[in-house]
Image (tube, rainbow, N blue to C red; front, side, top):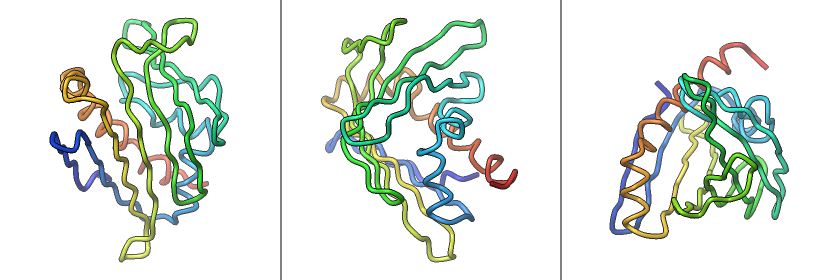
Length: 164
């Protein structure tokens, strides 16, 4: 499994996932930079995603939806804060309605992705989500955010196994 650690810090209002891969930093970066690759793992296997817009530049927007087992669609968006290929990406992450309009009622998070070379020559990826309040953090955890991202990240090795 690719996830080697999950750290929930309620005092700092953060949740951090650490994953390791046996491929280069540049290759892992493509998981974020290529919308077709992103939609292959961004979402648990039972809720596959479809990327609608993918403008991975500061101020850009990424919009997507996940499709549930009964065909229901759950929409989301990222507002890109910063991009430093292939090491760093930061974005605000939230839910949206069926028309893609942000729905702030569930709160948003700020996600920071860091990629770096690991000791064994592969790549370590950390995904740190910062929550605006303890209530939003608790709500996201109750909705299955931790389990969902662990399942999502668990799909990445199969993508790498297929080759570039």
